[in-house]
Length: 363
Image (cartoon, rainbow, N blue to C red; front, side, top):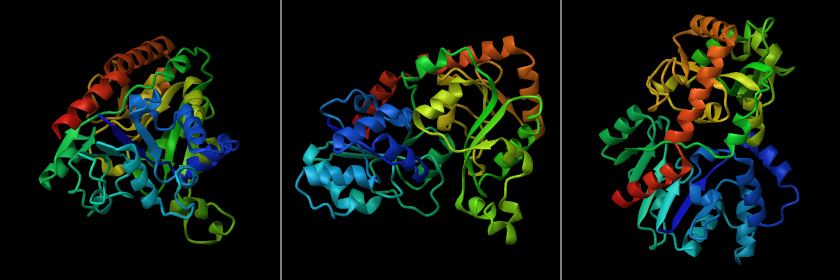
């Protein structure tokens, strides 16, 4: 089975990737540095991490990476990104195309796939407005309500989860955890409930070490700029307590490192997620040995309240439960240990790859 996995990177991560890959001068060198940094590793299939010769992985929105490949394979450096990606698929003789970036490479792209491609599979774990994904043979994610929505549109959709990254194991072993509460994630007008939780928990900053690494939206950055303070944008600014504990965004191994120094990772679903839970932070926080405290909802198997994770109902509940946990270190450590055991044993890369092969075969 010749599988091609296409992914993408957040614009905020590109600055870090360009720094790490400053000395890279080839497709393989830049890709190797990316994979070693473990950005999005929970979604990257095992053969990509193992550098399997029959498996091809790329980030179809990384212009530097893609243009390296184009030049190395006789295409003009000015080729557009779609043409490069299609050329890679044809050159690889891909049989299964697995796309993590369907908003960029949607139906029209699928219809242009080379004849070698037998199945097209996409991951999409968020509401997609009026986007049409009907050209794909299969849509996968780990949010049952979203999957049911796809099925109602007549599309085939199956449950598929992220996986534990073995690189997390060395981070999980760290016992020196000076950060009491860590949050890493986006901050924008789409995260109103999350903002309430963050504000409530940041209020404990005088008694505990609270670190927020926020990837602020463009509007929030504008609202907090010197010009923005002169404009009526107050609702888009972070409250004082949140700004006081905020730091720059973290990705890749820097994220793993921060989690390894934290007792608790605060998590919160975006407002549009409904009752389903299971964002990538679940795997990252538990995998790196922290206790995840997250909003109540329907979690993937094994992520159970007061067994391997702790859930809250609202902002006040989040603050109270976190303070109580920090004052009960033995209980906190026992819960964190069970969370790590859960993701290691129930969500291995090997099991994820076997599940993908089965889904691909049945698509």
